[in-house]
Length: 505
Image: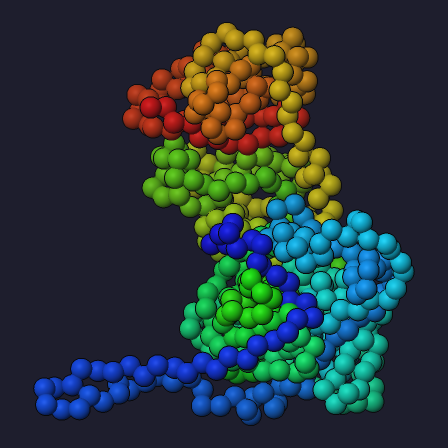
C-alpha cells in the first residue's frame, strides 16, 4: 500500500553524513499461566539464528564501499546542489529542508563526494551493483575494499526508474569475492535477513532483522515494489545487499523512513527479482530494454466492476491505445479488461506494468481479456518501452475549458451534438467522434469524476454514442437493468481516451 502523506517528508535516500546511535534490543520472555500453587515457567520460544558470524565472514569481502568525486557548484562550505526530483516525490520535502535556501549563497566550483555501498556479482569480470543515486553526477567512482585497497570503477549503465547502477572494476590483482542473487518472491513476512553496508561512512557493518512487509510503494518510480525490513540500515547503506539466511542477495537497500536520518526500523530494499533483470540488461546493453504493450491503462474500481456487471474488481482496464504502438492493430481495444498476461493472472495496474516491463522486447505474448463480458485470448508482439515513451508523452496534453453550449442535460453534464462549430470552439481533433460535453455543473457527479467541458462522450457501457439521444437512451437502459453506475469512455480535445464511472442515483 502507498505510504501515508504524513511520512512523505521523512522518507530518505540512504546517503552518508550523519551521527549514528547504538540501541540494544532485548527480547521479552513470554510467561505462561502456571497451575495454582506452582511457579510459572517461561514458554518455549522460537528463536532466530543463533549466530550469523560464519555467514557474515563469508560475505563481507563481497560488499564494497563506494565514494565519488565530482566538480559541483558549492553554495557555502560543504554544500552541493539540491537534486532534481519529480514533483510529488516523497523525498522532495526532505531534500528541501536538508539543502535549505541556497539561492542566496555564493557559488564556487569545488570537488564534492558521496559515499554508499555496493556488492560484487561477478568476480571474474569485476561487476558491481549499487544504487544509481550513489553515483549520480560523479566524475570519478572509487571502490573501497575492507582491507583499504581502492580501485577506480567504470560506469556500465544506470536505470533511473529502479535506481540501479552497474559498475566494472579491473578484476586483476586482488582476488575478488562475489555473491549470488536469490529469489525475493520466496521470502515471507517474518523471514530473517541480514544487511551489510557502509552506514555513516563507518565501513563494513552487519545488521540482522526480518522482512517486515512486502510490495511497498514509496512513490519513487513506476516500478515501486519494495521489501520493507527492520534490519538496521542507515544513510550510507545505499546500494548494499540484503541477504537471506542462505547468503543470497534478495534485495538492494535503497531508502529509509526516519525523522532524524537514523534507522528507526523502517527500511526499503529493491527486490532481487526486479534487480536481476535490470542489472542483466545494463551489463549486456548499457541500458534497459523494457517490454511495451502500447496501451493506456487504469484500475478496475468497484464502480467500474459494478457498471460492467463483473463479480469482482480485478484486472486492468484499457482506456486507450497508443498510436503506432504494438497494440495499434485492432487486437486490443479500449474497454477491454486485461485479466492475464503471458500465463500470469493480472490483479492490478502495478502488477501488469512490472510484468510487461520485465518481458523481452519482440516477444509474442498471450493476453487474456474480457471484452463485453466474454473471455478472449489475443496475441501481441511487444515493442520497446524506451522507444515508445515519446509516443505516450504526446498524448498527455491537458484539455482547455471553453464557453459552454447546452442542448440536453444528464448526470450534471450539458451535452450537444458534435458539429464543426463545436470542434472549432473546443479545438477538437477531426478523428474524434461522439457527443460533446459543453458544460459541467459544479458539485455534480460528473464534476467529481473530473469530466470537463470539451470532453467528448465516445461510449457508454461499451456502446458507441453519436447523438445526445443515444446518451439518454443508454442511461435509461442501464437504470432499467438495475445498474447504479454508468461507465463512460471520454475523449479529451487532444484525443486521449479515458474511462470514468458516474453514479446514476
